[in-house]
Length: 431
Image (cartoon, rainbow, N blue to C red):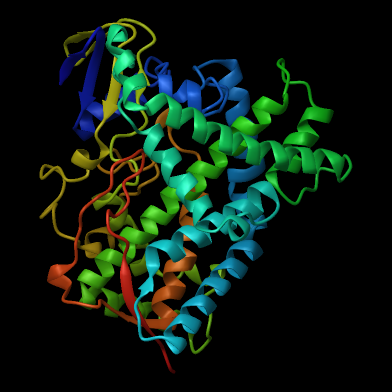
């Protein structure tokens, strides 16, 4: 579907075949990011990897992130952090269930846990405890502002409207708060260097080591370091907690599926209290549940927009250079052409099925695909699977009310959370 938003030509992609054309056949043509105003304010003037224009600078930044944090080897190296923080989350739930009969706020617990894991892996320490709910609110405000529609992007003479609405003031305030946090983290690491060994405890140390030892053709200054840290932080917290939130929502709505998953997890655990990452490869039904959640509830329903770098003929249509491309991952994953009963939560559809969610099969693309696909799929699933497996293994769960009455409303923002936090009653499982 071709539209015009003010002076900007827009292409909306809502089928797997068209997504394949954009993200594979002509991936190099559509590898740019549009110069959106909110990216400029919130993402260090396009100096991060997610919003940087396609080119050598972007390639180098992406390579750094993949090699030093998001590769399978790097993800495995932080296994102990994930298992420790997951264990702490389980203890919080046990304490809550033993001291009060009130339901647990799973949305809040999941956000805190994913935040703590990312803080330790990326920044070297936790930051949520000292700031409490204020820190969580900062994250929510950031993703809301990042996903906001800014009319000045499309009709420049109406840009005054965004000023009048207070958007720019809010965005600059949130950007400054995040910058102050990251500035303090980088300064602390610079004042306490770990030396020039290539063994590092966190991503800040990696970036400072690269700054000292490697030449990339452009300076890795403090702004670049903060921009990359912000990418890893935002991408690694909100999207994963959203996936966990919707996974548990669907399991609570479908007790038969919850029971089937619990049976698999307990069989693999074989009497042990905690699930480890070694166990996850034996859990085919867990994998199917996660894929089905990603199909119905992609964290970013409209993938991060792309922009065409040159004129091109696409399926018989002329697409101009500078056309902004929105890929509707939500619609594609519910297309009845590819999915039987697409609105139903049916993990069984992914059993004995070769379709994956990491960018090779375009019927379901929660992480995008191609050059601009999210490189953090391995990291995201490692965190999500471990937490989800332990939640269903260590507790029996029920809703405070009837499953039919569970509010499924969605929030508005860059990622799509539940509008109302997920509350559930946990009963520790006894062998």
